Length: 175
Image (cartoon, rainbow, N blue to C red; front, side, top):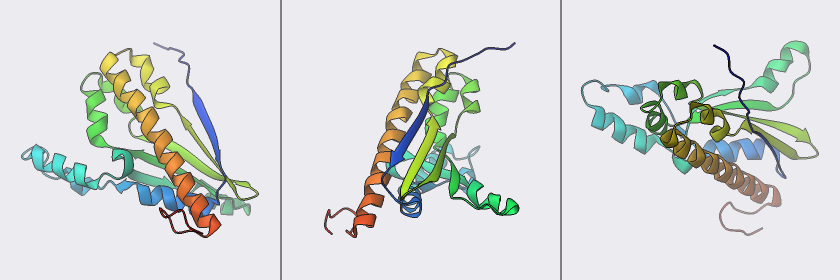
């Protein structure tokens, strides 16, 4: 079986240095580690507690970072670009319990790269457009919340990075 789906691709630009933006983004995310799932068969409540505590801003965790820009050193053309794999198993399971196929898109992916002139670009496929193909109202409700979570996470990272660029202390608005 083959199906064509429409995906909404989001491309944003932050008036922020790549290093400042990625640092702010990474600091905003919790960290996923397989050890968090230890005991899931015998003590699922403690696993749930550990996952809740490990979550960062917007309830999201960082699963992996792939430095695609650094890989270009293999060809002598290094650039600045990272793929982030982020999400939360507790959020994912609220979708996969209704349709296991939602696991194809959980966790999410975000690509951040230097665009020149001190600008950073952020690109991702909108979760609701990916999960929408499953036509399940509960899955879509969670997917729409992920749309909002990603938008807020990116906006906050951009603001923190811009504050760093201006010489202010994050969160104080001072210069």
